[in-house]
Length: 166
Image (cartoon, rainbow, N blue to C red; front, side, top):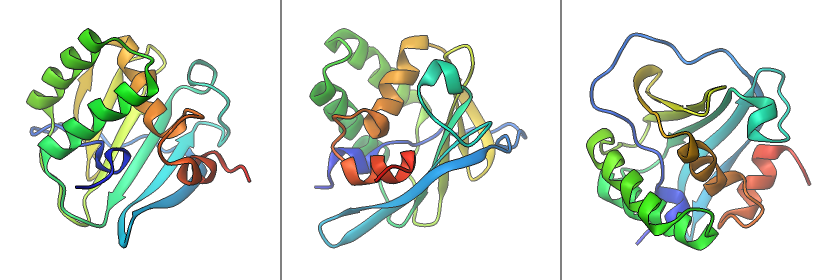
């Protein structure tokens, strides 16, 4: 089974014709698990700098997948990462997992997925550059982005690449 942090971020089924905002890259890198390259990741903000969610919103995390991953793998991995980080309650995690079950879809190699943390704390999702929906719970944004950006992430090398630190 793939490592939890590698399986996160799938987006809604329907789509609206809104493009991802043009933001400046903070950092980018690749995530590998064992022999497999799972995705390339890019973090972006208005000014190309990141210190925290509130100060730098909107914050974009964009993943370009190198492998097929199912919706259920994403959800299971996301919940696993939230449990490891311990910054949200089990009730919140289950509520978010239920919401994601209705929103996310499987991804194929080459798909580009993105989450945009908005100024008001909501998260706007995109699939291959097209807006697919919003998760409105303002506690979700930091919990979701922390999977990659918190110091206790399961992918510290990728975190350093995304934040452009050594």
